[in-house]
Image (tube, rainbow, N blue to C red; front, side, top):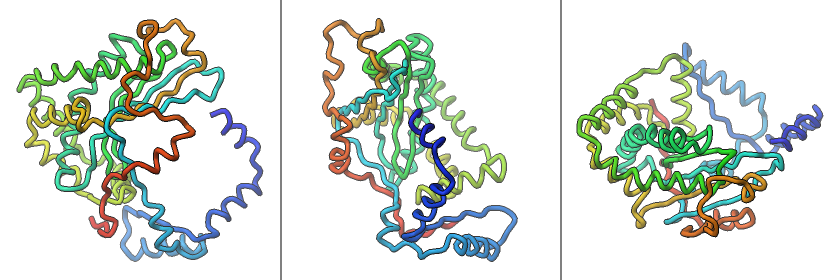
Length: 319
């Protein structure tokens, strides 16, 4: 935020040049994606020219392995990472609630991707209507699916200049727990309409070369290289039932044996002293939380976490 702006404004050209040199002193690794009206020879020539200008040796296999992105698994139960906003004038408190779903790889990977897509479609608007429209918790409120480096999750986020961070979490959780009944009561007709809407969305082709390139690059970045993912997800959506959606909902949000939730709270200075729609006086915001994280314990917590299964790096990317 403010600190970054001050640093950038004070930078001198020679500092940027020195930093660029440092980046490549120990070797470098370059991934290139060229998509369009050119052949393999053209692509090879362009990448070779780029490497020539970068100079230096390629990274060792060990250093290259260290670049591999991965996602840590959240422990069972509820974990809260609470910290205070850096800007003393900040009026907004905010939360991001991360509910781990699992991974996109393995025997059930694509089916879980399809199930999560449909679950998001069925719950997203309901969450907005309850938390934003009815409860008016803040201007920025939402629910989205999340995918990164083979990890999958549902994320609920909210920012408010009225409600405290713990209250935002509490109300989102209240919606999640109460909505299971409504999800179970979804009619067959409504479910089929949602499924057809998702299939229609998945059937939309890349709008242009830029969109196609972005989709392909995401596969490279995630090291999965499944360029037929959308078609595979469509096939899985066709066979999904309401029971599949309810099962994923229970596993992700409700059942203690599988639920993994990470809450990140950013508290505005003085939020405890505000007149806000907080819980009753004397309530403890962290009651019922299984794990509490603080900034000084974050590194040790990360070192103790398991890594979610990733795509097999040994498989070549092939269209």
